[in-house]
Image (cartoon, rainbow, N blue to C red; front, top):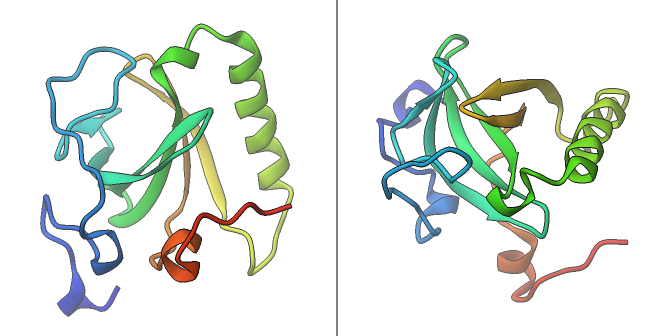
Length: 138
């Protein structure tokens, strides 16, 4: 982002305005509140999306001073060893891909009872917003 477009704590990019944001008291394995710092490094800014297996949050990497996307398993999946195995395999597979059409995966980190995938944050619109409906990719 250009310096004039820097986000302040609690602010969201234009593409995320109107997104669902959580700020309830945090319990282990639940989505963190806005402004919460996880693992001493990632300041949560908002929820980017949610799927059948996980949720993705916008976060600020305080060490590197960049925006990242953090993916975590849903709380109801935390005890599912198969889901955790698939998440780890997804990270290994994604790290093997180098393409301008695929976001970069930086790391798999553990914080507050969660395994988080730290990845490149790409600001933009969702396929649902762009196309006016949800899009299923094959």
